[in-house]
Image 1 (cartoon, rainbow, N blue to C red):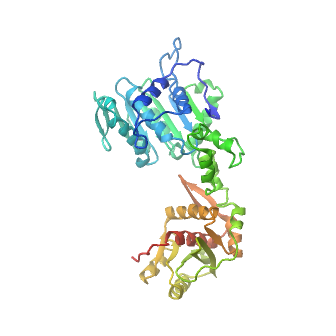
Image 2: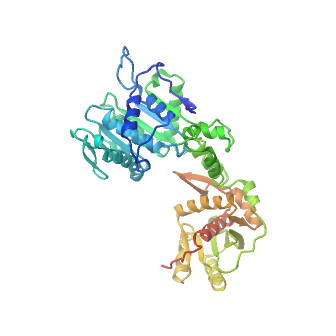
Image 3: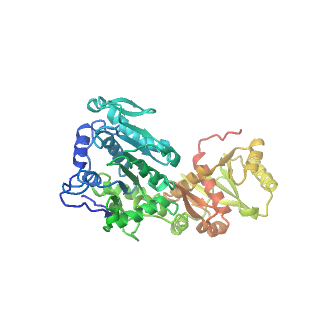
Length: 478
């Protein structure tokens, strides 16, 4: 099934000329990748997209023969093959876009992400004799240079200053939802000396911080409605209908053309969704913008479902401690595995504690129960963590990235029945206060955005996460 975008810019005529068909033919004959060393067959939607993206003005038009679009935004759910598409476009930029003098640039939120596309292009060239003889240099670090020395493909950091004065014939902008303000404009300026200069952004939906993408969506929707001033702006958005149920197969297909065509089985997607929080499904599967600050970290029904009597072993588990704002309260939680499920309960709460109160209590717990680890957020309690380590305790200090990993992992543990809480009243009160907030591609329970104290919630999350991670791990003391 050919799943067309929910919103897209229509071609100027039904029989419009395009470079897409030639590019699809090149892929069919020459494309190889580490995952598909024998070659690939493009999906119908991929052929459709390439044909529309590389539409050319017809004879008789004042821009006859030129590419119609100078800016293109492509948006769809995760895992549809955006990196493959970008790599194919990169090869187009080197071989078909310009007869000579191609200057292809790959941009992303990080050099490592941009190199994913670059390395795919490099593999295709190096594994195909027909293509490799057309390049005299092709390395992972020094760029890809055409045989006549006039064209090249490079990776640049997504920083506005890095693009100053650089001519660009074709720019690939991955992860457009993470683009910093000014980067898209800087890339456009770089293409102005080329008649067919083009900037192509490939992305998933963003959040309230994705200002560049929000602006581009606005322009794209205007272009799709026929705004003549945006005739050279291409917009192709696969997105689920508003207010769609998260598990609606048709909504999922609307945002994921690779699922609609059958390359990715819908039942596999539905299974994977069971372990993902709603805000993540809405953003990355349904490809819908999210506010980033309005949703609880976990569905209330799911959290209630996994509450009840717990009896974790009192030795060899994990204690975790967390504090409320301004040290008004603190909570110690405990977790341990029993019969394949990590059970957790609150051990003690403090009112207006001092660091010494927490230190002395954790020393006592360590002596009595020999825990595998004592977990804490190092951003909140750096001094306590250092003192406990110096005393020889098995401390697990979590930084921002690991707090984010803990939030996702514990959500998945509840979703799969691998975690159970004790229905402690304080935890029941605090859990819905925890608000999920995105930072780039990841999310965490935000202390700033949450609706009140969450020390009991965060100590529980850390205890469960470290209990699962430290099952067979000896915690080092440094």
